[in-house]
Length: 225
Image (cartoon, rainbow, N blue to C red):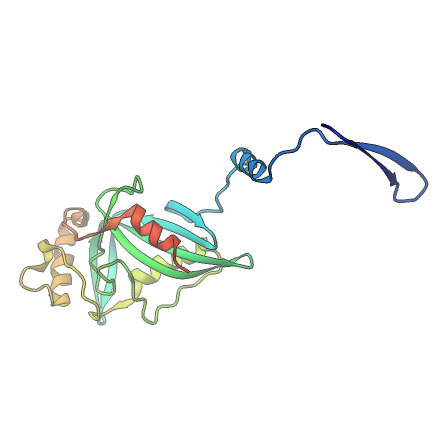
């Protein structure tokens, strides 16, 4: 049953008074109200960095998957520079939000031979010396720069590819490059660079080791704290 309330409101200058009648129309459960509002309210993403294929927000965690297309990239290994062909590569960046600012706290890399189109897609290991077989990255002394997600994501990829790589980590090398030299990164990268000079897209033809599905990697990052 609707009820009515009377309220007397004074104007800011105190010269006039207005009698207002407030009337309750309907009473609903608070949870039902919240559910209805969430269904009707618009959902907006933040400004996404270039190449962002996936964005997820869970509690204080924000996860961005930023993809770069196939290209020839310079790679430094123990002071020697190589130019190698890479397939599509994805940086999976987990930001922790506190007080309105986001801090990069975890990061993984993957690769694919086709663009990422769905979270059910299969991801593969990036066969670079400073990348673990589970996709985690050792950035060494490389410092990621920037204050916004846009700046940080671009800096991360630039630093990841541009840092001085070493062979501290065991990484699965594509069989087309390994041969009998899978433990000799100098020989692997020399062969890789030679093939890349003949075919800039040769990185799309290699068979890479399985990493995970996009969905499973995304879920793991969402739960990072």
